[in-house]
Length: 263
Image 1 (cartoon, rainbow, N blue to C red):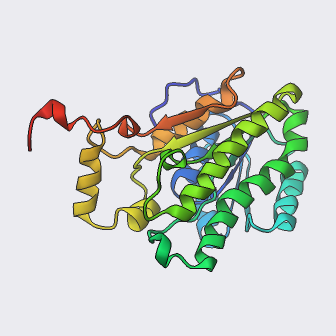
Image 2: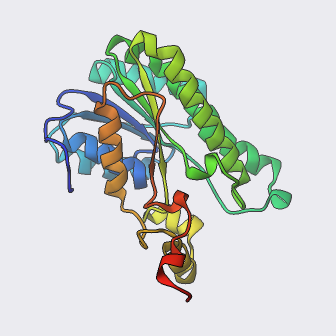
């Protein structure tokens, strides 16, 4: 991976990434391991975790994987106990586990609403609360994954938008409450990133992908490593807390098509 950081940036730190078996979660776990950290990854699907762990082990660091439904507080606590027992503690928690699909508000079922809110918002709360004692011991940090539509409208993703907005608020609250106790809490808001999961769910056709890419001032999708680099920065920036780092190629700044003349 391309990196702006020294290889030993996170030497002997312990990082836990929920939803860490695939996509952006794996990219962040891989970036941590490549920079010296021991890594724990968790998700609901064992078939994703085993091959991901094998890839992470190539960096020569300790790797722990566990199946987890972040909506279940008892499972979350069991994971934290395992991280303490097997890796000795925790320095960085990344709340990345998420669920999303395109649907209008009038067609969104109660189960669909609860599922996404449960994974994104409840899961972030449960994991942050359970991890806090270890993070306080080692003056660690939390990185929450949100989205730019957390502070705008979220057409066709009302469930995810509402959940991400809640996570963004929780990020600030934890930063203020836990800052005096040495724990930082920040967020990353990715824009359109080229991952198999997101592409299949949110950009399912070449035509839609092309249209979205043209909306981005940089006129392309981001890469998974872009989020990995952002996570490395927030994991190692000792005076940054309560921040939301937007990584979207300028999309949230608005269209720049006027610079290119009429189409």
